[in-house]
Image (cartoon, rainbow, N blue to C red):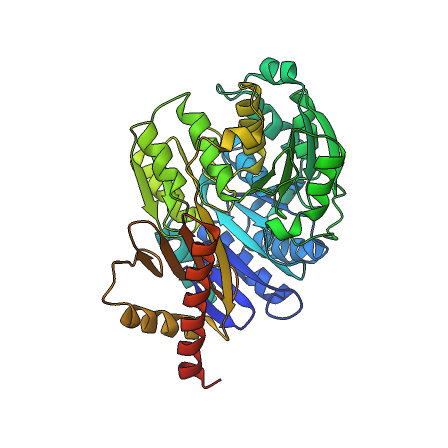
Length: 463
């Protein structure tokens, strides 16, 4: 399931299927994808859950139709984070799982994320087979007396909290003793119930912000620094030790310092990796566009850092191959293999507050132990994924004389900085990430790259 475009606002990629509701993403498409998945898992047990989006009930019923029609035994765990659904699939040893979510995409989007046995994200072969079944329409439909069934359970959040509390790197008593005050902003998404509950179980004084799971997002689902003004203000006014924010399905976590300053999403993975490698040794897996901070963490602990294309599925495949103890992306998504092979913003809450509890330092003081890098993240809207593909081919020719890494898109590398240009797997855009020693240098590199891309696109599409 490589990124491709069957409609201007439908994205099919390693992340699953996402689109604008009522346009590319309609009930018929959802039912067909569910039937394809039911055929892939041969009508066995499938765990299903969803985030809080208002289009969730529509998608839920459409997907149930496809699964039941292919004879699947469906276990519905209700509204909960993506990592919670996959963890339940692992606990129940299900044959597959579907999460109805568009993660960090805007409120008018929704989609499906697929996993196979016991919550394992689909590998490349499984993604290819799923797309082949979907495109052919060759579904294995059950007879009238062999239709599937639906069972609803409401223990998923309890199970996830219990699993996190059972991690050997977590010492709740230590966190209780630190008496941290934390403001949590869940954006009214899937983390709205579980994350405040976990923080309280860890003995934190919790101030809830946007923790009503009604799907009406008061800020963008992607918790960028620009989207967190309310959280930053609350951290300062409450004199809190830390601010935390999730995306729509709570597989990501970003941080706000005790000073009310939003931290780059890159710090979540870097801090979690530093914390965990103080507990155990093993390799790290990161994407090509993740900060050099991960190189520094790996060097400090004398472990190997592996780089992959962007996408949780690629990171997971490399983690399984290498036996890595932690992996993730610079988006604030971190993978803890003892819990599951997917990014888990809930587990990241536990890791970050444990890190703080073991120190007398503030979060601002903790991050000073990392070299000072600056990352600039921009995106350029493109008419279609096909044009994005042609544009990237032109980029390769334009910069052919430079030091390039083509693992994912085009990454131009110098001794003290880099810039990565790649197609998004979740939106019809080209992403441009740059990193340098100063904010000015990173922004200059990003801006000049965007100007080149715009010029090349004008040549391709004529405007």
